[in-house]
Length: 580
Image 1 (cartoon, helix red, strand yellow):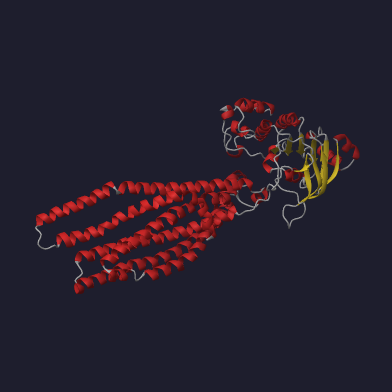
Image 2: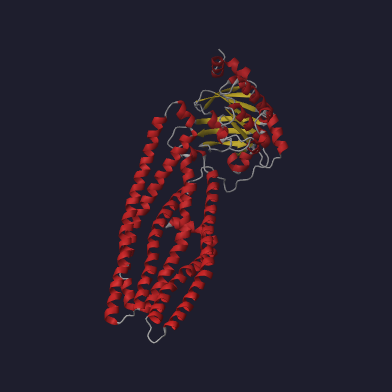
C-alpha cells in the first residue's frame, strides 16, 4: 500500500476535479436506474391496470415515456461528456506530473547507474509503467466509486420494493468478495513479473536497434534472432501465466454473477405465484439485478486493471527510490566564478565497493590556464581521473580542490557549468546542427552559434550541408562523419565559454585532415583556460605545458615533452613506439 500512498501525492492537487467527476458520474449511472421503475409503472399502473380505458392508458404511456426520453436526451449527453472529459484530463495531468518528476530524477542519477542499466528498461519504466498507472486514477479513484454508488442506490431501491428478494439478491456477495481477495493477491505478482519481462525485451531491442551496424557487419542476424527469441519467449511465458490466472479469475467470479440473477428469478417467480407479487414489480426487480451485477462485473475488470496499475506503481517507485551517488552537500555554495587552479590531493578511486581501486593516492597541482596532457597505456586511469573533476563520480579517498576549495563544497550544476568537455564519442541529438551547437548556451543568438562554429573550423562543412545550420543530424549524429561530429562538439564548448576544458580522446580514430582541423580548434579553445587532454596519440600533445604519464592508477612521470624525452622513461618508450 506504500506505492498507493505515494501515488496519491500526485493525485492530491486534483482532488476537487475528481470529486466533481464522481458526482457527475453518479448522475450518469443514476439516471438509467429509473428505467426499471418506469417499466414497473408501465406494466402495473398502465398495461395491467383495471378500470382504465385503453385511450387513457395510451395517453398516460405517451406522457410518461415522453418525459423519460426528454430526460435521457437533454440531461444524459452533457453528463456523459463531462464525466469522460474530466476523468481523462485528470489522468493525463497526473501522468504528466509523474513523468516530469521522473525526467528530473533521471538527470540526477549517477553515471554508474546508467552503466549497469539498459536504456530501454529505463524508458519502459517512464513510458509503459507510468501509462499503466493512469488506470488507477480513472478506475480506482472514479469508476470504482461510481460502480459502488450505483450498487448502493440499486440496493436501496430494491429494499423499498421487496426486502426478502433483496436478501436473496445479495446472498452470493460474500462468496464474490472472497473470490476477489483470493485471486487478485496472486495476480499482482504475476503482473509485476510480466512487466519486468517486457522491460527486458524493450531494453534488448533498444540496444540492438542502436547497434544494427555491428549486427550487419558481423553477419549476426541468426544469432541475434535467437537472443531476441529467448527474451521474447520469456515474456510470452510470463504473459501466458498472467492470462491463465486472469482467466480463472473471470471464470469463477463471472459464474457467481451469472448465477445470482437466476436465483432471484426463481424466488421472484415463486413470490408471484404464492405471495401475490405484482408482475411489474417482478420484472422491475429482475431488471435491477442487471443494474446490480453489471457494476459488479465492471468491478472485476477494475480489480484486474487496478492490480496491473499497482504493480506498475511498484516498478515506478522502485525506480524513483534509486539513490543519487552525487548530491549537493547541505551547505554547498554556487560556483559563480572559477580561476581554474585544480589540485588532486591523495586521490584514490574505485567504481564499486567490491572492486579494485582504479586510482591510487594521486597528487597533482594544475595552475589556472595551464594545459595538462594525460598519457599512458589503455586502462591506466586517465579518463577516470578527468571524470572526477566534474563530479561524474566522487573520489573514494582524498580530495580535488578548485581554487583552493574541495569541489564537493560547490553546487554540482554550477561546477559543471564551468567545465567544457569534448569526448571521443560525443553524442549529438536528432535535431538540427544549430540546435546541437546551441546546447552549449541555449539562449545564444544565431550569430553567436555561427561564430562558435567558425572558431571550431566547422562553419565551412556546415554550409555545404543540404540545409546548412538547419540540417538534421540524425540520431546520435549518424549523418555526419566522426570529424564533423567532433567539430560540432567543440563548437558548442566555444559557445559555452567555460574557464576549464577536458578533452578525452577527442582526436582519436580520425583521419589526418580532420585531426589537423580539430587540433587547431582545440588549441584556439584552450588559450587562457585550464585544460586537461587525455590522448593516446602523443604527437597531438607535445605542445602541452605539462605531460603526466599515468600507469596502473598512479602518476609515473610528469614534465614537458622535452623534459620527459630526456628522462628516457615510460613517456619516451611510448613516444618511440608510435614514431618508429
